[in-house]
Amino acid sequence: MVYVAIIWLSIFIHEEIEQVNAKVSVIIPCYCSSLTLDRALESVVSQALLPNEIILVDDASPDGGLTIKWIKKFSEDYSNQFAIQTVFLKVNGGAAVARNAGWSRASQPYVAFLDADDSWHYEKLSIQYRYMEGNPEIMISGHQCLVRTGQSENSAVMMSPVEATKVSAKGMLFKNPIQTPTVMIRGDAPFHFREGQRFAEDLQLWQMLAFSGHLIVRIELPLAFVHKSLYGDAGLSAKLWEMEKGELSNYLQLYRADKIGVMVSLIATTYSLLKFFRRIALTLIRRK
Image (tube, rainbow, N blue to C red; front, side, top):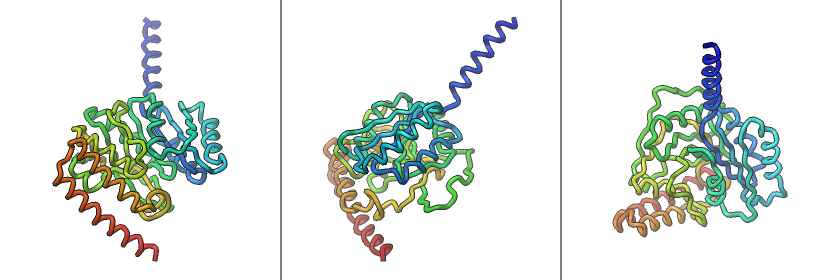
């Protein structure tokens, strides 16, 4: 009897150990990220519920090996705590290529994306992973994202009840409600990022999934942080016209895939151009 109890207890403990981490592969594309990668990684290793896997993808950073050095250092320091994969691309392909390269190597049923210059709230995975597990019909969940420039990032958030809003396909024609560092997606998603598209490639994926009938929701909690303005600042967001062309390309792709008609495409295009001119004006005012 005692022997049976010991066996049962060992099985129970083993199962509990296996459930310590979230079944999530965290994918971080890195490009000349030596100054910000440490902050991003710290926000991952400090999660209340840790991921099972971290995949770091260097997108051929032309910085004399500085980004690769940080990636290798992290891998050496934390290899005993996580399953860590490192990918070093030989040719720069952009965020879509880097994310897909990590995604193709992911071993977990869920994938979460984090850019190397952003960070997460320490309860992000705990809240989002459990919500996804409890609602398996969801293909993508995102959440609120705040712009932070030095304030405390780990203020308490209400964990229960978790409120989520369904994201409509047509609504995403006019606004991107989920930023990439907020996204957790099922690893078996039928579409990946469109390689060769360097701007609005994330929105293109969300739109294709939404217009194909897959459920997308946004958790109404601020669980991620960007450390620059969402547009008109450093990095890719500074290239406003390139961003706009990416959005316009998305409408054309949806039209060609018979996801939207001519009239909807024209309305979305007009609205997008109006937003573009507004962004230019706001950026000029802010820089002055």
